[in-house]
Figure 1: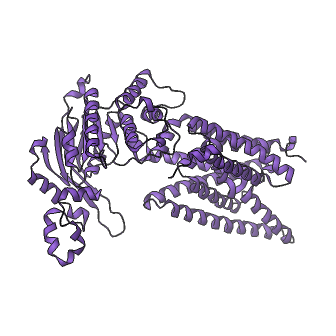
Figure 2 (figure 1 turned 60 degrees about the vertical axis):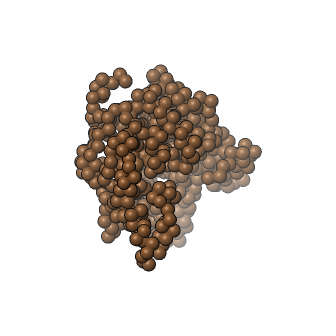
Figure 3 (figure 1 turned 180 degrees about the horizontal axis):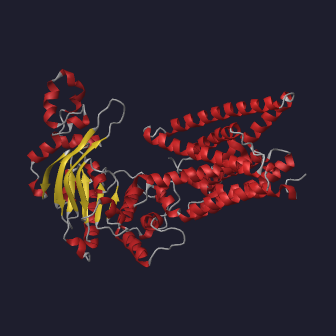
Length: 295
Length: 294
């Protein structure tokens, strides 16, 4: 069945919703060097999934779906703020903070996942073998996403999340740009640096959790980096960079669906591959090369 | 100036201000950067703050800007707390090192407009007053022709002018420039001094220039404060005698800089076998050593 059939319409809309979030956010992520934090937060989300499963919230109903997402979201936002606080107190060793939170969350997630699964096996004797295969499948979905599972509920959640993120970015755009451009000085002009920084991290955490359902934990950070990274090679005007980023994010997602469908590849990784190709093209384009500056 | 309310109060009023940096790590003690600073800066003054590296100049600036709370004493900026003065846009600030991310695809005009735009949210547009202030800032810093250029494509000096234009775009009453002439040659210093002179006169500013360079200071300041943890001198530049300077650059630095010995101790160090690593400094006067340290 084609991914463009009515049955998969929710998947397509959710995918485009995530792309719309990634477009402006990725510009901030790239310029403010938050890409690795994004990785940290998305891996922390795996810990959040582990916690949810451990608590018996497995997404069997709509209410459980929402509760599971809330737990993962809380865990991710917590991880983002812990990373930021550790980075501040640890004399700016942000990479260390990310490394610690990332691996600890993955470890915790996997341990809790295994405990939850063994409990499940215990309840259903005789299905140990099948349960094992299931377990691998579930982990794979968490790690690499399965957008084709998306239903209308995921669409509403994604669109609501996109509304919150895009609305906040737009409403506070001047403050956020000032902070990102010149953090050491913005406080002297009344822009609270810590509050603004934390706000952006919270938005990033929400975006990561929403992206997870499309591309999974491992690749979530990619769609929050690639469009902006590519767009910054295509223009030196912020408004045009934002437009390019949107174009690459939406186009990359659509094309990812097409390619995945045609080749029989998983959709999430196909989107990431297409966007990576867009990045390489932008980097290699004459215009892009002309703008490459030594740092 | 049209600010009748503000004309009587001093631009800056420091009362027994002290600051000790919190310990950096386990087992370390805090470092006292400032002690007992009492100073009044009247409006319209062009104050130069002179002192050695590590003498507390930047710390004092941070306190005046309300970015650091003093450990002891009180600070008033135009009769108000620094945070409030800042909130009202009374202070323009040029940091010592420009650490803005010039990779941002922003034009000169966008950067100059940033502080005013940062006060707006959502649909709000800049007032015509704000537009005028931005225009005037661009004009005073001679940036009109560069307004559409990307800041990342400018030279270091041009970027600095953009940052000063940004600092005065909020029409402040106080302009604080932290080491604005680092690495600028003598003719550049003179051009810079006359630029500051023009801006200050045109906008009726109180200006504070922090520097460790005597020449730079004399070019811009009509009052001088010498700072080396405590305030050693606060008067017109003519009162700056060699003995005052020697005192400022020799005293009180040792506890802050730890092993680095300056000036009065230098001769002794040369004969002291335990201070071999200071030999390179023995032939230099304090000024060249200070310059070298930057």
